[in-house]
Image 1 (cartoon, one colour):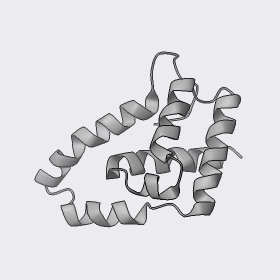
Image 2: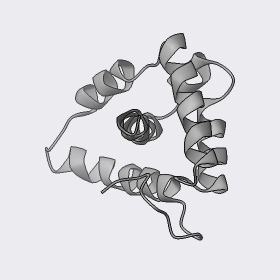
Image 3: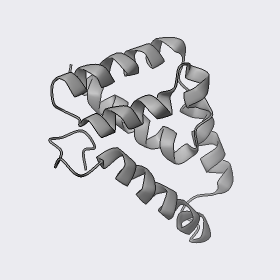
Image 4: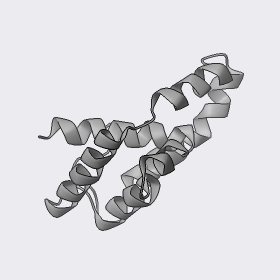
Length: 110
């Protein structure tokens, strides 16, 4: 499911995706689908450097300006990205995972 395709006005697809992932992680660990060590490695691998961070901020702004994402979605992205890559890199794994998926989709729209 795309997190950046023509949204219904009242649905924040990004917040919903983060919530779904946050809820599923403990179940995935308890069922043996993944381990906490795998999640920790994923968390670290999703860190952004300054170049990607700037590209993400730019793509987010362009997506909002072109109507691809709603204002609440753009604001949520901005809040999670913060003012520096460090701010993003300290987010929980579910946030980094969903935002990385959004970033990939936005890059694919270029």
